[in-house]
Every structure is written in structure tokens, then in C-alpha cells.
Image (cartoon, rainbow, N blue to C red; front, side, top):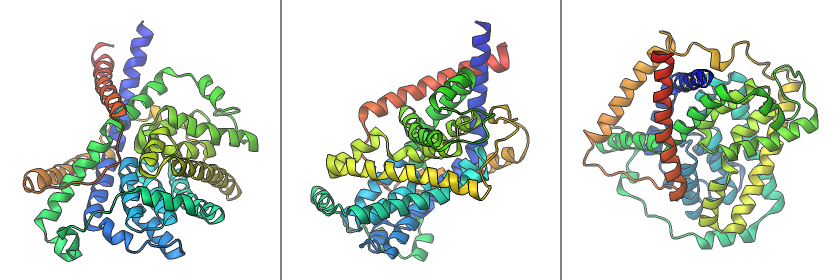
Length: 407
């Protein structure tokens, strides 16, 4: 019993430490995302993405890069762009970029995994888009695309605020109020995923033995120096399965990815795990609601195939260039999380910035209405996540009490 209580306290302390490490990055990322989403509108994006050529693909990728990392927001925006005339290939590029190339995800990855994984995330995101584009050009799913367009409703009309110039928006109280409200919405979209994800990461670090990961990911372990092709292929195939079992969004999954890497999972397997937020059942169900099951399954197969090719390509490419990460001498769970260091001062500064954004949105802009379309989440899944998050807070409170007061 004493051992369990100690592990409980350690798990809660690890979760709190993980979140403290990442807090400033979350605020910075969602603040930047909110600014961009208010000042760059969907209507202006879709006008430049009407074909499957290089320019449309580049712009779809760029607009995704400056968009939100929330999968549900990305799915809704992708649907909106597609129904307003953006090509299918450019829409897929936007979807992949908005979940793999966004600024906030790179910052979180740099904190938990290091620069090689940041490079892998951004290079891999581009490779995912290029491989998907190539597969679309080879397969040419014209009939599926036509049926999907017919299924979608008529597009929304432009709002008056969207017609304002960039300089007008910068001087607009309404625009800045919308930034504050969008910032709050970003947190509202992810608080459950982040809570559950970081709590699971703490529990896994304290309670799950290394043998479990070495069974799930064959021939893995901290002492393994190289991986054969079939081992890498198994890791790349199991990575999405692990992501499916812990579907909590890309931002919440990064601490788990760091734990997998610390347990000796290959670079390819960890990258496949990170890339897997668009090949899980909730996303499949949403795409089926939007486009029909045939198109949804086609998108699933397209993204899964692209993920496998990209993860393997990254591993071998990094190996040739001698850039594969060699592991850290200090485990992420052993770091000193709550020292008075740069993280402390960054968190204080960005918490003040967070307060300013909330003030702009809900005090100065209390009369401003702002609504951003979201993909239709499952009420059952959201209810389960909500109660899991509440349970996580109770678990964390009890564990921190044990860690700091009782034991």
C-alpha cells in the first residue's frame, strides 16, 4: 500500500511538472493562433486554393501552418474551405498542415523531445502533404470528390468584419475582442484533452513497466542502438494504434510521445504516434458526416499510407544524415520541474499576457459576439472526456497532497 501511495504521489507530481514545463508554450501558441485566425479569414484563404496545382498546395500548406492545431477546428475549417471551392488536394494540405506544422506544436515538442523531433515534425508534415498529393494525383478520386461536394451544404456568406483591411482590423476594438474570445475558445477546445493526456503521461511514467512497451513495440529498449526494417515497420504500424487507444489530441499526446521515446521506441515509431491524430475513429466519424463513408474511408487510407511512408522516410533520412536522436541522459520524469529558472519567468510573463487577452475578450469586448465553426463532436465522447478530466483533477489533488504533505 505504501508503494502504491508513493507511486500515486510521483505520478501526480510528474503530471504537474509536465504541465508547468509546457504552460508558457501553450499560452504563446494559442495566442499566436488566435491572432492569425482573426486577421486571416477562411474566405480569403479559399479564393486562392481553387485548383490542385503547386500554388494552391503551397497556400493550403501555409494557411494550415498559421491555423489552429485543434483537430476538430481543423476539420471544420477544411470542410468550409472545400465546400467554398478549394480543391480536394489543397484542402488535405491545409488539414495536414494545421495539425502538424503549427507553431504551438513545434514549441511543445521542443520542450519534451528536443530539436530533432521538431525538425522531424516540420519536415515530416511537409512530406505527409507531398505524399498525399502524389497519391491523389495517381488515384484521381474524381467521383468521390464530386459526391462529397454535392453532400455539403451551401457555404456561408462573408461577414462585414471579414471585409475590413488588415490595418483596419489592427485598430478595431471588435477585432481584438474577437482575438480574446478566440483565445478562450482555443483553451475550451483542448482543456479536457490536455488534462487527460498529461495525467495519463504521469500515470504511465509511474506505474507502467518498461516490459510493457518492449512487448508492444518489438525489439525496443533504451539499449537498442539500431532497428531493422521490419522492426521499424511494426513500430510505425503500432504507433497509430497506441494513439487510437489514447486519443487526446496532438498537444496532449506529446508527453506520452516523450515517454515512448524514453522507453526505447524508435524515432519512426514516435513520429508515427505524433502524426496519428487524423487517423483515429472520432476523426473518421466526423469526415463521414461531412463527406459520406466512402470518402471518409478514402481519406483515412490516404493519410495512413502517407503516415507510414513519411515516418519510415524520416527515420532513414535522419540516419543517413546522422541526425537520429541518441536519447537523453536525463529522463524527462527526472527533471527539476519547479525551479526558479527561465521556465518560471516565462510562465509568469505569459500568464499576465493570458490575463490581458481574457480582459480584451470578456471585459472590453463583452458586447462582441464571436463564433467559429467546429466539427460535430460526439456528445458521448465529450461527456466521457469531461468526467475523466474531473476525475483527473481529483487524482492530481490527492497525489500532490500525498507527495508534498503526507509522505
